[in-house]
Image (cartoon, rainbow, N blue to C red; front, side, top):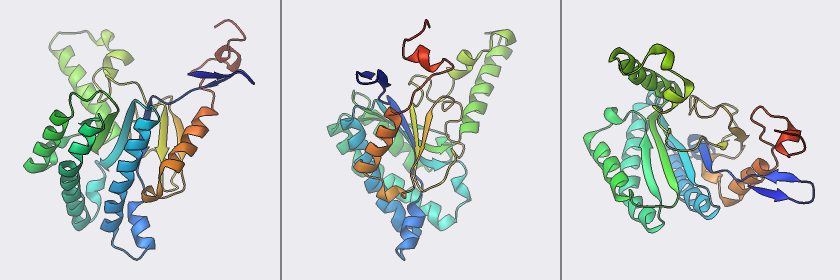
Amino acid sequence: MQHDSSDNHVIQRPRHIAVVMDGNGRWATQRGLPRTAGHREGVKAVRAIVETSAERGVGTLTLFAFSSENWRRPKSEVSVLMSLFLTTLRSEVRRLVDNNVRLRFIGERQVFSDRLRAAMNQAEGDTRDCSGLNLVVAANYGGRWDIVQAARRISDQVLAGQMLPEDVTEDSLHRLTCLADLPAPDLFIRTGGERRISNFLIWQLAYTELYFADCLWPDFDEMELDRALADFERRQRRFGRTGEQVLGRVDA
């Protein structure tokens, strides 16, 4: 957190950015290419944003790679996405290690093939000791699923007599959600011109600043990220307090 002495405005840098990478298919269609070509181009944008986020001092970057609803897409497209996922994992792990980026996945991975699950586990293991940017990839993830799986686990604890129903709180439920060990996202970015969060990190986005970019994901580059960061820095995050309290002009 920094202060702009000219107007006493508090400038905040996001510790955690969450991104819905929307528009790969439309990017390809606009160019007369198959939708899968857009997904391949989108991988290049991922690589650039990971590197830029690390350079900008972002602690955690969470990317919505494949939602639990994306299985409804044409089987041919899903097949290409799974193949691209596996190929990208195998080719990018060394780059992540070289850049001190720690990778982890959230979501229900049991539906993936044995080869893909093994590659995911291998990538997490290979980057486990990295201490720079935390890169979180949400794959077969849904925000409602996250809440439900946490509720089931806490119900098991109640049934086992490990806690009482009245002991169930926001904090106890939060500790069982996928990103419980990380700060909540400060900034949510969605590309592609859509204005919705699409079942992404529903629990975690309660106080997150939302930013919607009109450009399609393959066109989201360093300049676009800096625009989002500049917009975030102009906002005042009050968390229920008044603006005067945030600025320290009245007692907290």
